Length: 298
Length: 298
Image (cartoon, rainbow over all chains, first blue to last red; front, side, top):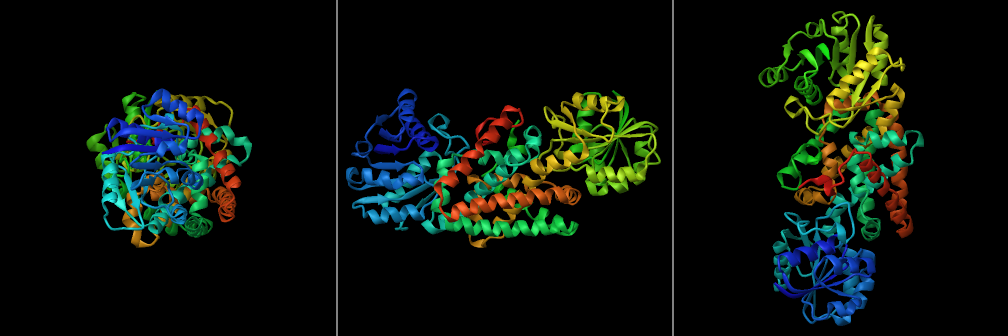
């Protein structure tokens, strides 16, 4: 599919891409760069790729370059590779926020480069290359964003790449992407972090009990609150405006529930609690969630 | 183990109890009452028990009576059964809040009754007898509460019952129970309902996208927000004081995160996001959660 693919940043997402590209033979050669020596030596030992110590060398002659590092390092990465990129290369990423990144790239005035952002909606609460696996993208959505929304040859090529990997592809502009993801992803993460902190900051008297009885609800939230802190720090900085907006409307909704509790209003409470069942059914119907009780966990 | 057990209310929890008592032969006879005709006919058709139309008849001669209805109906249930209870019966329940219920029972001045509250920390997002299964309580905690914390014969008997069912038992006073559960269970539920409402109330423009990309975080919260509305209405009314307290400290924590986002403070954000990873590890270590990525769901 490609002669040479370069993956920059080889954590959970990058290493999963490496595994699936290699498994499905989507490139003749795969180059990899990661600034961590530990990650590089893990890849050398366990996976099959050309591992580079020099980031600019790693992108030379590549037809597809995928940036899979935390958002905060994009600028540095781009400055290091820009003069080594092949003419007409497809440059993409796997980041969770798009508008800020697109600004950075526009300001770099790259010539003869096809910049098409990718966001595979896939991941786990684990991080690092040992957590990756080839099936991570199976049946998941991948959102592509580009300034030029018309179906150029390169967009079609990148689309086919994600489809070959197992994903379903949707094209969305940068602003809409950041808006939607602030609801589906960034809001839940902010809330999960807050809830786990609330519980952890509580009276030490019940520390053991909180852990023992976490199956009554809390444990669900700890999964998301265990996600990679650096990745999430950068998401919150890059998408701050949208996130603050949804957090404010969340707080309003919470105040409504608080009032209903305070007034012990049975009717209001059951209306609130009935209104929320529908969404899960729709998510299950859309193939984005298991229909097994308790996520099917044992 | 018991000659006769009566289960009042045969939804997810009650029907799971019926299944496991029957499977493990923990009673010679099992009586069941549910005010819903549909539930009663489901039990008659699919499970093995004496199904009663008259609640007071259902408890006659029983050695163990288990109330498994929503908290709001306890008073009515207790008034209907109190004069038919056998002398020295063990009366228990499966409710998620204890202090208010204990007040009701104290006010009834029941004679020759051993009232020992039970709270099995087990459940799923589904409700109704068709959702029940015999393994629901396996390796889960069950909290017993009683005014008399000394190990009477009856407490030991009830404890052995839950252990036989597959649970681990802890004794805790009514107040501590309601306090701990407001953190581990009621707070997460209030938050899950708020988050799902926030997303559902949002601009209809992105309705499909929100469902499609829910795997980026949101879907985890929809599970809890799909729980039984009547059950949860009653929990929020019965434990309002504790719940409002933890919701307020949650809001304070959220404000801190909002400030860190507003000031784009990388250090503060990564400190917050790093601090929350530990809790999940402890929960997994305590055997209360799977260590598989994404709850092991496919």
